[in-house]
Image (cartoon, rainbow, N blue to C red; front, side, top):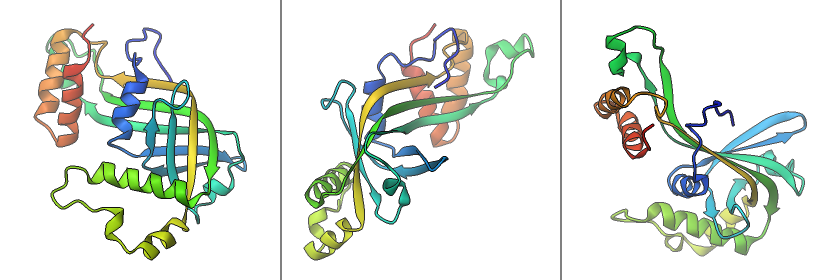
Length: 213
């Protein structure tokens, strides 16, 4: 992950950010297969207590050749992206004094790399599917449970997927939230994004929580 030399955007607690993001957004799982990059979007569970940097678990469709091309121990990259938004120079207080400013993009992201292992075990898969479902159905007024579907149907669906486990060996986080700008500029960006679309409002919320320079 690229980080400017000043280091203002480095996430000081990427494991915490990973836990928050994994609970809300899917990962983009990237592997190298036969000399080409392959990527799949999938939800994953993060277990911070399993290993020095934690472990990610999820599943792929059995028909997805990405899992077949994975040899035990191959390194994979799981990307978790948080809120992001375009930032116009017009939001900076400094633009009122000079036009020597350019657009940028604010965002949060965590990259988790490590060895990828295939888990083709129905019991293991059933537990992962149940935990993922319970997590995302929590709080819904009429939440769905794995137990709501016929058992034979769930068993047939489990045969159509394959489990994967990524044991994290490198964890990097980046929170690019205008930390390199003067306080008045940061306030201008927050105000502008807070009045925008929900995605922009989410970035404004992240900026309010970020340390100022």
